[in-house]
Length: 195
Image 1 (spheres, one colour):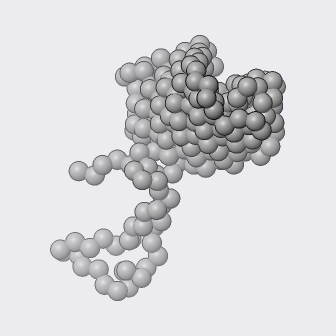
Image 2 (cartoon, rainbow, N blue to C red):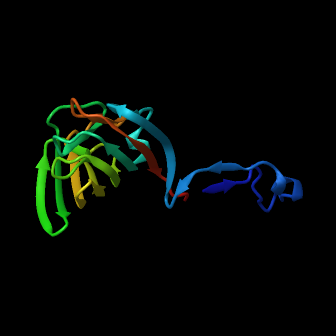
């Protein structure tokens, strides 16, 4: 959490006790990031969307997902889309471990919510860092931890969106039909360094 005083003390403008006791501007923070938006999706949700973004100005996002799903006939529950682009314009790779089993998977969509062994997803906690600035492919990296009734799994993921020109203005989490999900989704943007 960052707390900013409304009046800033400088050599030419000294603050007094009233300034220190005045209401403060409080911004939710995560080390190095400022909260853009938190979305709480109720059970049965098929999509959530973060809008009003400017990837060129924000440069880097951190997406936190705490989710679950009652679907149990596929590991891929939901995908991540930039600017609602639902084409084969992504590359997603993961190295995963489910107890003693280690494996690798890939997809032409960025998997945002996934299960293990086609079981009900009781819990998923993940963080995905997104390099958002145009001029190059948009790289993503992250870690997912998920729990099903019978398994605990972890994944190290990397991905990219091969669009190099469009400014990222929205990020969508969309369920694969007919799946649904619920959870808390937080999007953070990196705090710019002050020079």
